[in-house]
Amino acid sequence: MNILKKKRVLLKYIKESKNIFIMAHKDLDLDALGSSLGMYKILTKKHKKCFLVIDDKEKELGVKKVIEKVKKKVNIIESKHIEKKKSGKDLLLILDCNKPYLLQNEEVLQQFDKVIVIDHHETNQQTIKKAILIIDKDASSTCEMITELVYYYDIKLDSEISTIILSGIVLDTNNFVLKTTSKTYYCAYYLTTQGASPKEVQYLLKQDIEDYKIRQKVITDIEVIKKTIALSVGSQKVKYRKEDLAKIADTLLQFNNIEVSFVIGKLDDETVGLSARSIGSVNVSQIAEQLGGGGNNHEAAAQIKNRSLGDIEKELKDIISNLA
Ligand SMILES: [Mn+2]
Image 1 (spheres, helix red, strand yellow):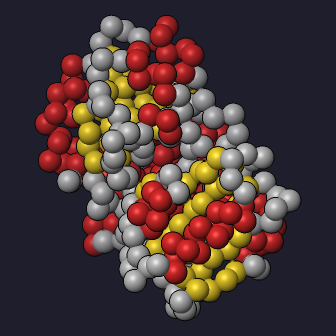
Image 2 (cartoon, rainbow, N blue to C red):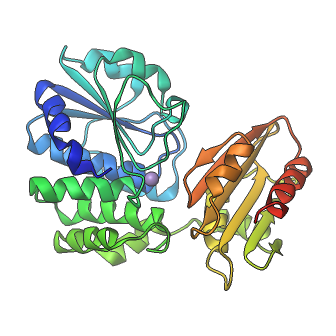
């Protein structure tokens, strides 16, 4: 469903509210942060008082760079300070996420009567119940959805914010490969007319060399199954971040003939992480669900507790071998 089909209810909720709190998923990425800042811009143009709620202690490099750039212009607060910033007419806007347990802080949900979710991920039984859902599963990214709103409301963006929003689209589409439609290109075009700089996007997406070295160690160990499926298993001795597994999975799709990628690695002593990507031929969400995770056709993830890496590898290979 297109975000503009819900613009009335969205506008009604915005109009009725005085203070608006924006929160995305934990372990912010540039799509979550870019869409949050885009929404922040729209709302401040509509004379609302806005707060961006961030609890993440550790932030990935691109997110750190963006926060450094905007922190003087944007009210950023931790969730524990929400209560004293409330006005009595408050709205919680959740971006790039629709499951409570993925939020920066899921307890925040109880503090609000009015909640709206704007997201491009698949919903399931765990999806936030009390919210009005604005979900566009066909959108490449939440940044794409927000760009549509910006365009519709004819809001002027500066080059800094349009660059950040574009970087969210570039991140989630893995450079205009995954889930990219004519609308995605149109949004990228539109952001460029608003001053978005592709060069600056590349700067925001630049990786940390130490992270890359860790990833490289996994990537050298790739197994290709059924000619189109790449599987990479992390070292037993290394603990990876979820984002690293995701980036490896993205990278694997860049190789000739590879249509699906799976990466597994330890996240901590009890947890094995899975990250999966697909150009569309295989629904990776269904596979991740079998391991207790979820996602959409193109990208999915799971975190599996109390099972060994070897065990998960075996189960995953069984699932893969049963694919048509
Ligand atoms: Mn996203």
